Length: 361
Image (cartoon, rainbow, N blue to C red; front, side, top):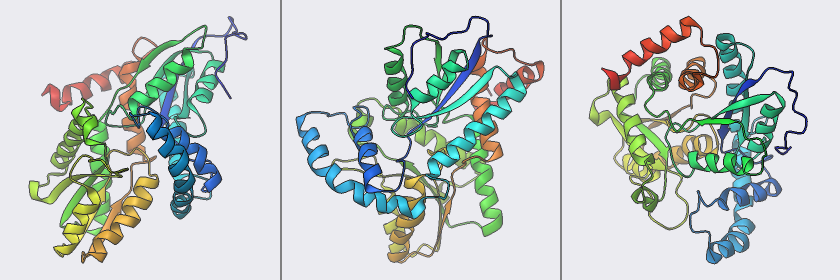
């Protein structure tokens, strides 16, 4: 489905407000055939790989797309659910729960749709569904807590690229990040406390974020700084001493230097030091996916334990936890101001949350 022109607009229908939840997406199946077009879309994005010259075209089309899909398909098969890709399953549940919660607060003329940057359902099809629902106001919400040009700005490019060809562009707003939102930090902390209540506490808590090439950070991407802020706020919420929590970066690709310290090398060092137990959480992922379920929960566990480490626990992403959905709705609410009629209770709650925000104390 593609976004189309306004040839069927019904002037008798009331205008509605739409929320586009956006994420990276997944291949349609854990197969080599499905991985090839997915990886081609992903690695052809100039926000992801900035040097899209002739050399990269040759490397991508003649080497990577002829070797990587088979290996990636094997990894996806390890985590694939009966319902499909974990990322898609969790994101769909988030969209459904957020829609129900927001409509209960603001009324029925509010629609939530999920769109993916590189996989189905694509952003264009999600925007088309919002258009058919008569949404002339659209809030774009990239589900990346920390802003990066490789993710958040890529969603912005996709949305504006689609509307570049539209005759009637809706009113647009966009959420840049929510890395320090109190409800997001509280939900992360609650999930960790629950895990510790059931399994005991570790010697060390490792917060692993997706990495970026170091030159992206040096070029002005704020992602690194926002990851550090999230880590500090989460550690403070948990009341952890500085020697009990650590922050690293995972998922390196290619040969160039990425942001330090590296997750896998850190865990290998801890294993060699005979650390008795490590818990790992990934506060940069709104949903579990290949990078958390295979790379962190499986591959890095083996790295740690084969080096001599003890117990290893991965604490799942927030996914569709009730407190996570509530936090995402709290992030959305102030951006809807002037678009929807806000109940008095919601106004009072928002004012109270704003007053309690660490930045306002």
